[in-house]
Image (cartoon, rainbow, N blue to C red; front, side, top):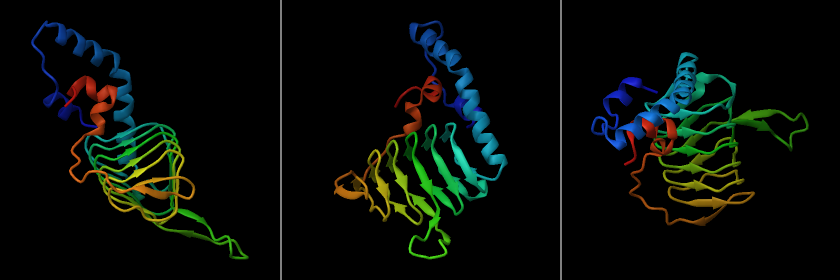
Length: 198
């Protein structure tokens, strides 16, 4: 989170107008939340994670090496997301990962009598949306603009623009638009208080 970026690109309503009062009231009320987001992202960067500008990371559980986490610009990782960093997790730009999603990069081989573990990286493309409670298994690639439905368990790669649902996740649509241009961080109350909406 960059305070200098927010200050430079802030919404600037006319001084003492009704909109000016609303904007500064929002900024004041959201100050504590903004500070929490800033500290969390700073702490992750200090521990070795790569977090792009304006990305939001809510309180989540990280297990493993933070150096293995890479998040692009203007992405949102929701509350109570579990990131199992036994292998690399690469998250693109403008991605939304809703609350209680689990990204697993390691598991056990169930057919092995010694129940050995294996690990494999996860990659999530730009503009992907992983809905609440979904689980992404080791080695999965989620394509650009793909949507993983709430509660889905994804064991195989999801193509660009596909929508998958269920356990195991199955493709139900492939019609998501190619020309995606939204910024999900602008929907976050602390950032919207500074940047306004598009």
